[in-house]
Length: 97
Image (cartoon, rainbow, N blue to C red; front, side, top):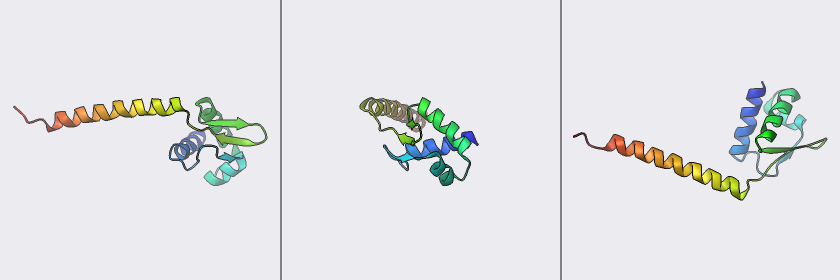
């Protein structure tokens, strides 16, 4: 259940379903995902360690906004992926000699 909670919460953060500065209590997230608080709590701890959320005692969690460095890092990764994809596509499209 922890992995399912982690995957769902991370996906919702990545797809902006839980936008930056979104705040919620564990109970609210448990209801939203249809599971108990324990896997939610453990998933939130993992997400905090990865820098996606901030846990606030007795106040729940807050989705952390992206920093300029986060955006630069994502842009760099995207450029590498696009370059690799273009090379593979070009290799497939090259006429046989």
